Length: 484
Image 1 (tube, rainbow, N blue to C red):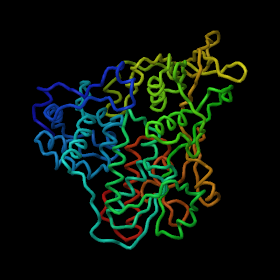
Image 2: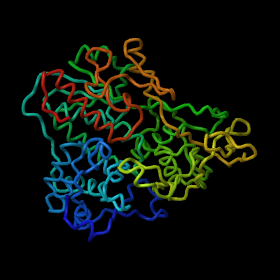
Image 3: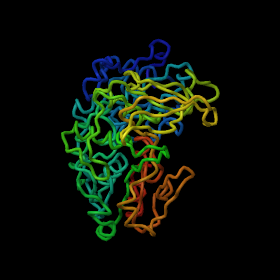
């Protein structure tokens, strides 16, 4: 906790944004950092609530010890704060920027709509720790002689690799793309998280003995069987990358795209890389001077909205089949769980037109080129309401309705028939492994992250990577000192 009476004396405050008219002119982060005294005042609001639901399981997947580091920040002990934060979360500068903060939803003060600004404090701790030089390589003092391969360098793969390296194992990370980071680098736009934060962590991990092999498409360029032969353990953290099929007529029209190729291309442009990417279409997709329609209501859809505005889109319309949620939830019915209520992302606040309870019936066009999106209103069971059809002008349309599993052309293809998969009622295919030992049906082969649990949050991927690292360390050594 922070100051005993802080929650009574200090109003909630979070970092402010640059005006929308300014921030859409660049792809950099646009959050205006708070001063140290301001952050300390917000940390002081952490109350002696008795049962801190914020560090979960309802609040934080990695079980951050939030009251502890709020108290340390309040008392100006930034070094101890980052040590405490790192004890549960390898990459707080990532989660402090892109996590939707279920911890704040679970905060006791959220019963009064004024939760502690946990996410703001977390980011401030990480940024301050870099500024003061507290984040340095922590190489293992004793080496085990064991060798572990990690497939994929997204948040799950990076977290697992760092934990395993610190446990004394020789760790090799295999990444399909030209730089490490996975979804963090190529899926999340720079205006939400600039990529120098990934680069700094990669350098730290290299200093801890982790070796990165980029441009290595496991299952294609590098065989899984060879990794299994050369290593004592292999951890598959391939993510969930195959777009969910929309089943909407007209998706073959020029101008209709899945969301991820669009986001990947722009992230590669900002990173001064060639837009060609393994597994994604390489024809340039640009929204400048165009009318854009985004189908879907989640984070990926919102990222498309923000990217389109920054590319110079004339108008961006976002379609959500769900009904417009209430402005405020019933606290006594849902707290401390994540509530369904009206939320507006920073990208949506830049000028998007949002249509709720609307179904996308068809993409329409002329001479094979998209010209509009045919829609209609739906009832509470998502059935079309007759006579409510309308067409929205569209030069580009992005489908952002989720992902149904990893690419099937690499690791899964090579291990076909050996690796047990699970297909749910929505058609998502995940690799089967429990959340205790993370072992798959293939000997010496573990899995963690979205490839196991399905598409989820960065913070969940970090949790799974850490837990899988512990399970692998225990399997190889007979015991483990890595945290659970």
